[in-house]
Length: 375
Image (cartoon, rainbow, N blue to C red; front, side, top):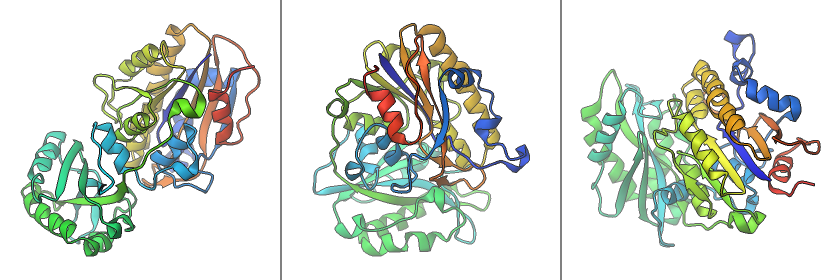
């Protein structure tokens, strides 16, 4: 029997005061999820369990069966793999956001807020070729990577994630990183000068490096579970995870990694992948992005669209027995805009068949249900 994990990134959330304490998941309209819960199991649990940080890399790897000891400390290397690029053991890679700073030097936005996608691409071109020993790689919109020679002092730096640091002083946030690398310090000074031409509405744009990462291997998905696995995704981290685990990857046309993604195309890609793979993860990133923007209505609407356009399509067009789990990886609060290690909704059940009762008390139960042979 095939297995499908529908991962709605940052599905857990805070109660929304404007909705009398409802969360975006509770406020959303999701008849397909409700039907699966009625015939299967609805639960609420933490994927983090207080022993890993609440972010997508570690939580998704955990849901795919990777042991905690094998989970990378930072995810930049996996995002690099997503773009068919690798590094040697003598190099390292950092995530690098295009961020906005207000007149008081405080982080106003972690995601290039105020710039169009085309302007973000133009800004990235301005930052290319500043230093020979730092390679600047533009991924998408505000997301970039820096590749440079390995420096132990940089790998040991703790830089607060920009999406968790809005409102804080940028100089203080980046002080340790700047002090540990003359190259990075110069790169940030020069890139800030080049980005001045994009300044507007009291905002200056800067690059914000963080999450330094070295080369690290992962066990194969087939070795872990004896199954062929596939992923339908757009987010760089999920593509990188899938490639590192040796899984098949499909990125559908018009996938954006945000709420405007083509959900129907993702459903069709998932149906195609279920013809060849024993296990498929379909990842939806827009819910997380909306919550980071404090857009609880947008998050709820996106969840509703996943139900209507994705789940109902799968239910109508896939006619073989299927084990199905719908869950989040962590909490992303639409109130604070930050990640949390609280509980996320989980729905587990069967399509086109019946099976044994499903226990949902920890993430291990999700793994057991999806990866093990049915009785």
